[in-house]
Structure formats: C-alpha cells, structure tokens
Image 1: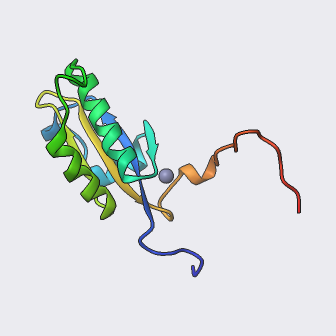
Image 2 (image 1 turned 90 degrees about the vertical axis):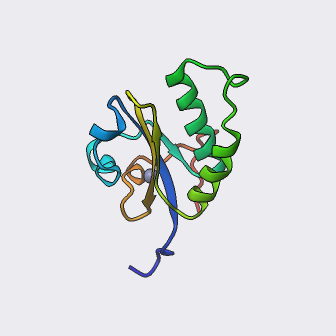
Length: 120
Ligand SMILES: [Zn+2]
C-alpha cells in the first residue's frame, strides 16, 4: 500500500463468443479470460471497441462510424468504467476497467523498444 495512486485504471479488452444475455459478468472476465488487448488510454478503448465491433459485423469504417458511441465510450473510459457492447447473437465485447492492483498484465512488462537495459 501507499505507492499506488488509487483510481488509476486502464482497460482490458475481452471478446466472448456468446450473446450478451449469456455472457459472463464483466467483473469475472479478468480472472477467467485472457485479455485480447490492453488499452491504456480512453482513445485506445474507443478505437478497439469500434474496430472489434466492425469486425464482428463484417462492416467497414465507412459503413459504421460509431460517431455517437465513440464519445460515450471515451467518456466512460475516462471515468474508469467498464464498457460492454456487442451483437445480439454475440460476440460480447467488453472493455473492463482494471485497477493497477487487479492487473495481471504487470507480470509481463512490456519490453521497451530498442531493448537496451539501462543501468544506474
Ligand atoms: Zn492490465
């Protein structure tokens, strides 16, 4: 305790091949599924939701822009909220807000580009 700034969230993207009404509760996904994507900023969250939804619908960016949804998604993501969307017959697509404490992706830190170890 102490070092963590509470309220620091990022989002994990999950795609579950099930309709919304049979999909697992969003808060269970981080413990039961591997994140398809780790999303660090609200823009990344909206971007990922839009492209994943489009892929599920088989539509192009010209066909579905998600303009209204985009603003909502960014707002929710900024507030650290979990966003769940999807198609009626599946898949269920969700960006789950994960606090630094809950996050398991910390255990596999990103390798910095260039890969050189800095010594002090
Ligand atoms: Zn994480």
